[in-house]
Amino acid sequence: MANHQARKRFGQNFLVDQSVIDSIIRAIAPQRSDRMIEIGPGLSALTAPLLDRLDHLTAIEIDRDLAARLTQKYPADRLTVVNEDVLQIDFSQFGSGLRIVGNLPYNISSPLLFALTNHAEQVIDQHFMLQREVVDRMVADPGSGDYSRLSVMLQSRWRMHKLFDVSPDAFDPPPRVTSSIVRMIPLGADRLRAVNEDLFSRLVQKAFSQRRKMLRGVLGEWTSLIPWSDLGVEPTWRAEQVSVAGFIGMSDALSAAGVV
Ligand code: SAM
Image (tube, rainbow, N blue to C red; front, side):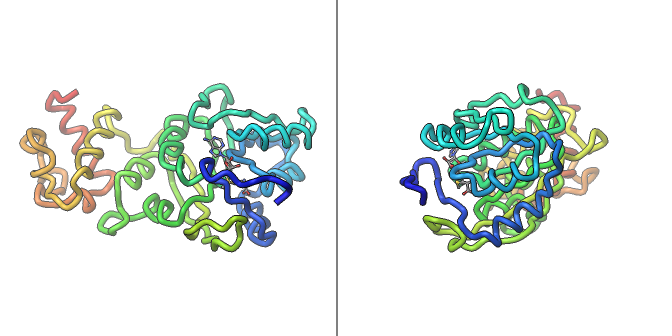
C-alpha cells in the first residue's frame, strides 16, 4: 500500500479495485471547469482520475503524511491540499457552485452530512461513499425501519439517490461492512421548509429520541398544541410514520402556537 500504514482512527480503508474506481468516476462525471472538493483523498485512488478530468481540485485530508505526499505528487495549480479536519472547516470560504465528493471515513459521516446541509445552497451536488446502513437510512421512506432522524433532516434539504453497493474486498484493508455510493442534490428555493428550522430540528430529534413510543408520549406539552387531524398525522403514530412534510407541518403549528 505504497508504504503507508493505514490509520484506523482516521477510518483509512483505501480503494484498490479499479472497476469500482471507474464506476465512481463515471457516476461523478467530472467536467474540466467544475469547482470540485474531495474529502479524504488518502492515497489518491479517486484524486488521480479526478485530476485527469479536471483543471483543478481541492482536497481536504486530515492525515499529515498523506497530505504531504499529495502536495509532493501534484503541482499546486492543479491540486490545493487542505491539511485539516474537515469537521473544522468553514465551507463558506469555498464559494458557490461546488461539487463535493469523497470516500468518507465512516466515523465522521453523520456530523459531516449535517454540517454540509448548512451549506447546501453553495452546492451543485455531492457524491459520497458511506457505510451501506447509513445510505439506507438517508434514503429511507416513512414507515420503514431505516427511517430515522437522519432521513428526515437530510430529505428536508436534499434529493438523494443510492447508486450502487461496494463490497469490502474493493478496499485495502477491507472494512467490516458493505459500502454504498449516494448522490445528493440540494432541493431548490421552492422547497417546503419550516418557518423555524431550529425548532423543526429539535422536534425531529425529540420525536425520534424514543422511536418505539407514540408521538403523544414523546412530545410532552407540545402534544396539545398540534392540530393533528388538520395535518393528517395521528398522536398515536410513532416518529417513523411521519413524512418530512408532516414534521414541517407540526413544527409550523408549534411556531404558530408561540413555541420558539
Ligand atoms: N479516498 C481514498 C480512497 O478512496 O482510497 C481514501 C478513503 S479513506 C476511507 C478516508 C480518508 O479520509 C483517509 O485518507 C483519511 O485520512 C481521511 N480522513 C479521515 N478523517 C478525516 C477528517 N476528519 N477530515 C479530513 N480527512 C479525513
